[in-house]
Length: 97
Image (cartoon, rainbow, N blue to C red; front, side, top):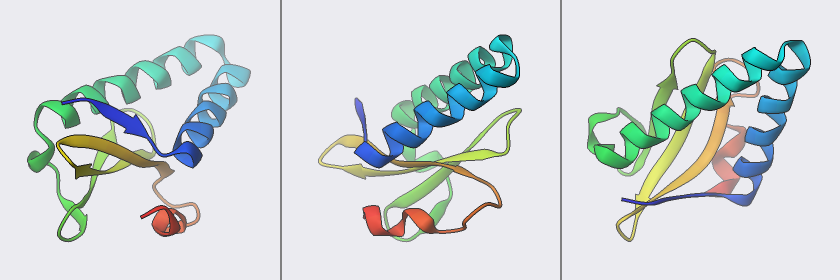
């Protein structure tokens, strides 16, 4: 399965990577790699992840960082709706649905 980012999700993801790189370049790379791994797992088995909002919006935890990848399956593809911090601005991404 292929994935696409909602335009706002792509922007916030790039901002998160830049933030971690500003702290330490290696940390930004680790964050980027952790998100890439989550997305690969989501594309392989999207139904494995718990529903955030039934029936089709799900979340997958980014290991080692306080973020979730919020996604849905649409037309046989994965749409990334947000790369959201666990506690900051809960549900801000709902307008992207």
